[in-house]
Image (cartoon, rainbow, N blue to C red; front, side):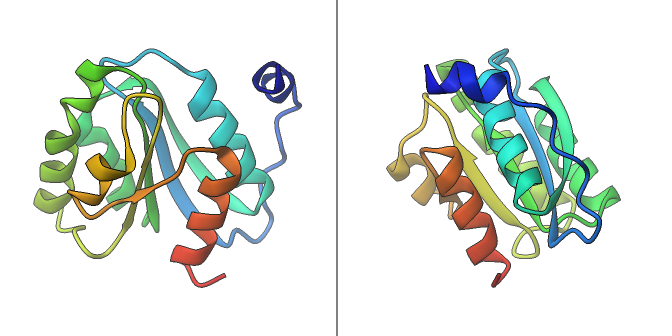
Length: 141
């Protein structure tokens, strides 16, 4: 029931002096918002500016929005196998946008395991608390 409690939490205020910018979304065709929302709210509370792509976000949107917003981190929520199959498209879009090695990529969700994420050189978190810790560590905070 902690997920229900977290979803009922008020929207955190925008950070006045963000410690970093995160582009976050649920990868197409995944429609699960709850895990992404839990992580987004936790990142926002921790002081990150979050650019929310919502659900069913196309792979290219992660790179496009990261470049447009000078993001430090791209956070991808993947909770279904069809969405997991689109990880290569996300990585290709990031590389095509010239962001490879310039932004930190974090991936989490029910459909992915650490080995999946390690294979592409991204960071993996299982909980919203881990996501915040990983984001802060990635930025040296």
